[in-house]
Image (cartoon, rainbow, N blue to C red; front, side):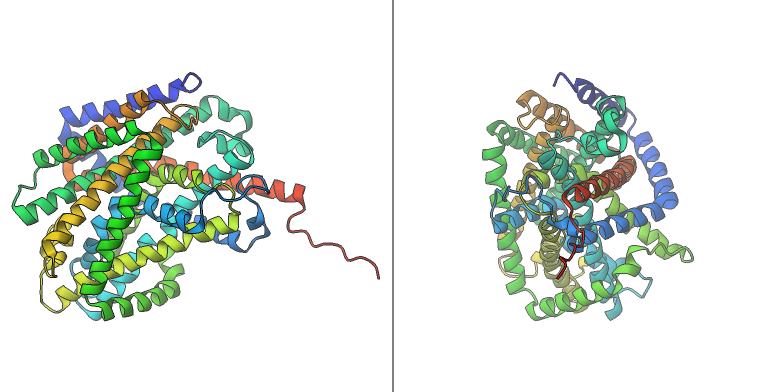
Length: 505
């Protein structure tokens, strides 16, 4: 805490100002964030698309490059966790509340409300486009953003003994300046982006739990209800944080996977199984076929489509970037001993495929109900759509309660892990931040999520996240350059990639 106390205090100060601003002038906060968000998406949408696409290219390069043989640690190190356990942790880290919140809401919106390509809503083509763009938003681009941050952190931490700080990874570019003011600025930006990203996700969770209670039991969808939900969950994740990383987070992470698995199997078996499997297979082909075009699509000549891209694709790229320090640090911690090639394959491809199955199962079921006229899922509030789908299948009440419990456990796990990561980021990379530091961050996370909900609900959450992600996106690009520079230097020293000279006959 001594060395980097300024990172902690300045970050807390900036975020407390945001809280106070939101409490006393909530309308102004919403207006300001809306204006900044509109400026960023209109002016920098192209930048987000190019940056994220370049990061995907860099990650895919490591799959085929000789550099992929380098280990995250010494060449003698071997993975701490089994491959299956590692995959499970990757999926759990990147899944979170978002997958449950948007599992039905996004595909049904693309199909029936506003289509990605401007085709008529409700058509067969709208179904194909809806699923293809849902895969795009939650596929390898999302995981490449997480993966590059995690890869850079793991490489410098485990192979070169650097502290687990974002600033420490930039030493190949900035040298010793990362230990001074420049490094502190980088870490402060990273902390603020992480807090906004995690707090936004907690806000989504509170809204969806409220939506479930409203849909099932008529409890009002209001800020007061969401306040109570956040306060209850805050107490629970504080208790989990107090019990330590090995107990609280581990138990809840295992519970998350079991609950998510039960919910997925329920819908896959009792839903339109044949349609789901056919749609899953067809969409993978369409996704791969159209990936380059979707990656750089900004639609300069069609205002309606460009508005859709700003509201969905740019929003998601900003969300993943804001979450990248948090998820990246977690993934890095569990990946020591793996080769770079093995890491990229596991992080980019396996969790993405599981996510594709999730979205096809829940989104496909929602689309089929709407397509056949059995239910009007598209007319429900975003946070109620999952419960509207479950209501059309057996054991709907049990599954709806299970879904709310799953959201709650994800809520607690995200906040608990978030307090740990933030504690680490503000104590010079300490792997054992004190409870006082973690509790401070827990309170700030809850306060930020409540302020954003109070000042403008879901829209305020989305606006603030896009604003917070922009400065960290620059840091993320520098991290990728730093990694490439360090790896090329090491490759020369180790002779990796050189063609061996043939011995004379």
